Image 1 (cartoon, one colour):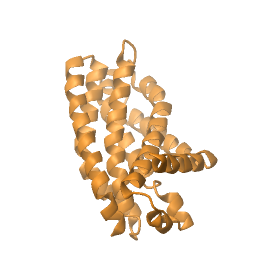
Image 2: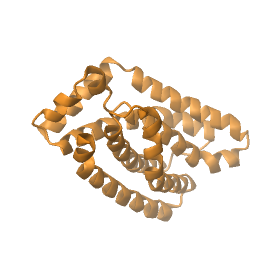
Image 3: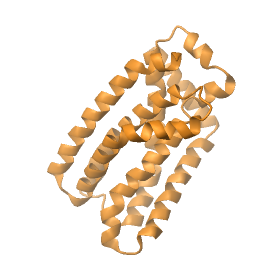
Image 4: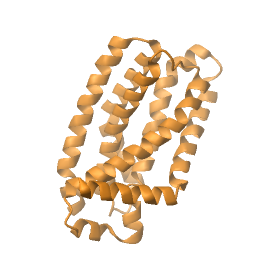
Length: 222
């Protein structure tokens, strides 16, 4: 646990000292939500129907962009070899980077959720905010788990920026579908459907996180 805390603390300090990455992700999300808002027109019913899909399409794109920053400090400063040669378990490196990526995405989501609800006319009262928060956390965990793995896998490739989304998007499709359906059920107040999709999301999270933790060491060695 001490190794994981050290990695998380180091990356959080770097994020604090250079917040432009977080600001750019937040700006990207807001711009994407606005673009979809104007593209869908002024029909409130269509806005509400498409809202959950727009939300998770935005967060999926932002999640992949954020995953590209996962090992940015190590790559920029040439510290990746030192990190891998340190007496730190590969799984702990992965978990530390995964936690930082999850915190980054949750911060972006917390900043952009209120404007999203206002733009698309979606209710967040009556317990919906807590339900949606649980869906956001579970969807984000699955998305970041896969993104962190492939960020390490593509670290030394030349076409990293192009390869990362190509590898990540097909794998996270089940998570995105589950998150979209769960979010739609939250907004419609169908609590039984929320519970069903939420349990499915949790199973995806456990599967993806476990597999990524197991294979991360082999991927970075290659």
